[in-house]
Image (cartoon, rainbow, N blue to C red; front, top):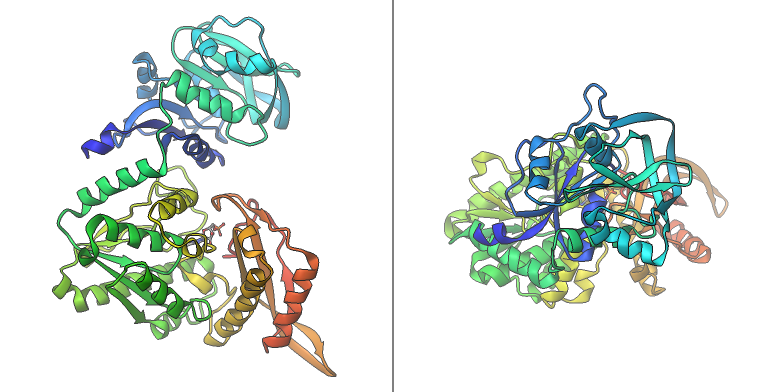
Length: 532
Ligand code: XMP
């Protein structure tokens, strides 16, 4: 624990903004360790040394019944010289705390705005910080707003730093304490100087050095794993996906091969030939003690007749645990497992509302939620605080083959969340064939690496077609290809039209049971990457 406590970083207090995770992403990109906590926590989190506090935006209006409020410890920290950056709702919370006034704007401001920074700034924090540097390039900055409330009376302890052309106060600074607040969002790309502002905050005000690198991640994880596992033995659930593969490989490096057993649960929801390919590659990278469990019948029986996405995810999650339990019991006495490791990522934890009381469940990721006590194994999740691109950097640091590190992500519930409606073996086989044709075509035409994730989805829609002289009435495949950096947001992959039409033709000609192919062109948000 000692090492972790020594780590310095920024806590991002979440007030329900859709961008909270993005703030953490930006800070990590800059090279700073950051974590999210619920904006109402009554005590500062103690997992690392808090050198700065960021208050996120949020949908509430200060003063309204039920609106999230600022915990007392935050202002105490500012008095102890820990800098605070309030963003949007975070700014309004600060204004309220210092007896200023916020009002509901006549209409919600959403989109680009121009902030004009004052020529002469008195406040030391603001001067020392970013505006001094930013306004050296220009005192007019394009910023991105999304707010329904704004400041009507600035507390006397604050100085106005900039406002928009329309007269909205866009940034303020406390005259004596290290507190800066912005009405706009520096974490979104549309704010031109956003990254400089965040970088200025963490370096100039918080005094942090940019030390969050693959090497420091590795060091931190090594320390934590040793501390959590002690002299124990770990069972790792591997799927062949990027996260679990790198988890297993890292554990072998940290604990040695004799203390790590890997198991692939073949739930029958894997892609074509995937289990054999994965097993071969995992052996190749040094996972010597690897077991493959064929659990297809058990999973498909448990899923029979289930169409609801959340129910499917929960059934799959439960079935995974049961399989581990059985496996751990069957060879556990010989190996004496104490821990089960998973490649859970930070966005999985956040999206499953694992970090606090205020977040909404979007999808229950199958690998979040802990283990039943009766299993008697403790969880090790070395990547619980990492984003996918950070995990990939670790993979490179470990010297793993790029083919494994840069595989497209594949969800734990596998094709189970890519068959809409009920799941049957016949539908799985159709989907496997169509998906294989799509992915092989992407590789053949050197498009695979330009896409973050691509796959086929089987829709519960039959339509009429004509093959030769015959009428067909068959299922529909949707192809999905997205570009993203971490899967939290994504946009459609611009695959050439002729590639798509050729692939559609190949699928319909070769997969008997599919007579129509569509291409999903929706971004995330508002859609998600997977269809379920
Ligand atoms: P969504 O569909 O939420 O997906 O936009 C974001 C990324 O997460 C993957 N995903 C999962 N990964 N267990 C996982 O390990 C899951 O339950 C799960 N659900 C979605 C998805 O493939 C995409 O890369």
